[in-house]
Image (cartoon, rainbow, N blue to C red; front, side):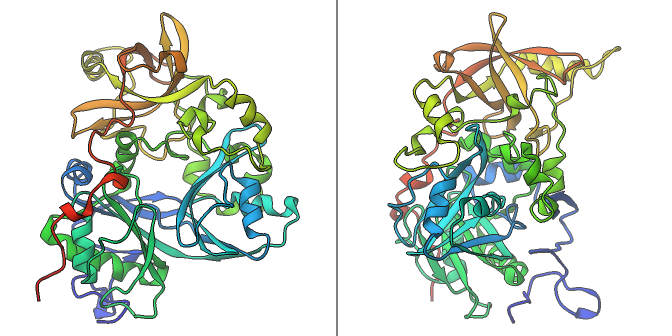
Length: 461
């Protein structure tokens, strides 16, 4: 078996090798794919209900974030560049660790965010994100070398994820801390391949990412899948992916809010950056009961998504003045809304009645991802108090839930509000909702899990 083959992967015509779509093999039992992030991705893998249970009761494998190039910033001013475009303090960032960087436009709205890795004193990588720092670099006049690399990025998450990865790699992985990174050698893959494992994910349960050169993606994906069969691994597609963000408390650009980068004409019309933006994101319709012309209802500030704690006002960064003003008096924060079951059932009932029906729900997400342009008005006693984003059906909890930016004085658990469900200008259904815990998932989070309590996944000799 070589780096581009897998014993179990589907074989193309004439036995020439595995049939692939970008970074995954084409499995005969997976029938639906979607154009997400500008290329084809699995839409539904092993059934949306089974997939949505996987990060609570088992394990999933996802390639949903592959497709965006890895950006490397190196040189004497690389750290200063990331500092100037991020609210985070990157000057106390240990080598060999990850950080969630949040970047603003001049108005203080989140323009871009994503994971970054510090590889050395003067070399940093930015993953699964838009090229906002590259776009801003020329105006900052800093001496930075920027390179791009096509990579695979696989997420392996759920209570059995550690065992699956130990079975795959044949060694214990108990020393890998939350946000930590280590180089790994995957059996069956060229030992010289630059592949790393990081303990991080979007599920808010135990989760990891495998990352490496794109050409090894199909083989690595299938090797993980084969190693996970003993643990009933599920292949998570985009249809269900954002359910874990909603349950786990991870607002996400391109899904739960519109990145401000998309409102910058110079960025979206740039001959390089604009041409490489995922068209499905840029052209997402501005749906929901908020007016389509109300772009502000779709944008978010760090405080509005509960990331204000990341802001360090010890350095100059784009949007600092606006963010400092908000920090002095934050107006809104993100909570989870639990939708009233009877009102939700009324929406379904309207589909079987004469006249204009209410906007229907799609399971498990409405609108289907990506849906950054969706915004539903939320009111209290007739006054607008917030904006609700994509609504998710949680099969695990058997509830309809959504993230909502709400006035801070109404963010207490138990507060009752009304969501105005439907597209502006169409029939609107007032749906009662209750403010609930954030995050909604009430299982142990990744950083708090005692790995020693998990049985070993290393196969007995």
